[in-house]
Length: 384
Image (spheres, rainbow, N blue to C red):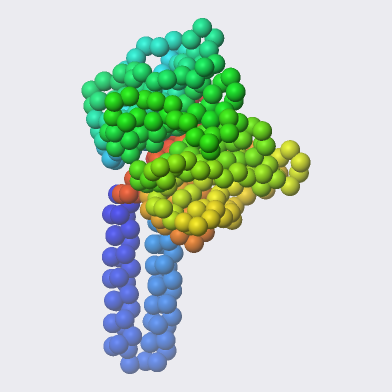
């Protein structure tokens, strides 16, 4: 529909330009010709405005589904007719998964597990989707991993560190290469797990200091995996990288970045991470965006959604392409959405009634889906 409206507008403008051009050519009066030329200029300017407005409008998210007594933690898309959102039912305190089949969003049954929730989801194919989270058993947090085989969701055995742990995010590269990250409860430290096609195992590395809470993970290849989070010891952010052989880490002081919440990897020279940095007033935080160019991480300027103060953070990021990226977050004055057009980050409209964002996903066809909450406490799904 968006393309149809744009096409109609352009056809109208082209016809109008042709009519005015004919007037200029056939005019025997200088004044008439000049008037026609001025009109032509105005029409061309109008054309640019129409196209720009239509393109801008296509970036805006709108609420497409709402679920009461629910909370969503993440979303993943395989196609515009196959999209997932996961979280938990606040009324039953059990895992929740909903799916869009091209027509409507509906709840898909998950295993009945008390005190359980899902925080991350990633898909290899329509019949190969992974969701991760946690379940409290006898007062201890246990990792929880579920798998969709195209027909049903089932629990897949996953190791839980001594003292407990939970998973926050997952990145599925293939049926034999899936990564999940989170934190260990007892030592408040890194938790990284890997699926090799047969079983899940906890991964050890000298890069894991035992002081990190990992919030997000993304991969563009089996030898280019990125994880982001917070370091409890320094109160700063941490970025971890897997090159196919070993994990390495980069720490940020609490004076530069206090935490990173999400990451998206497009290529080895194009990775984005979002979170929060210290605000000018002590104790405040402000949204932060960082970019990896293949050599170093750099801060990228972005609009401040909270002009009154500095109480904002970005919670999710997803890329349609290198020049079409969306980031979502929360601020003191409400949730916000930002868009990267290849040159700069700009704020885009966020529907009224949205209380906050928890995640976002995107497809190369331009489809963007975000999950969050309404001001009435219900869980919502938004799409452009």
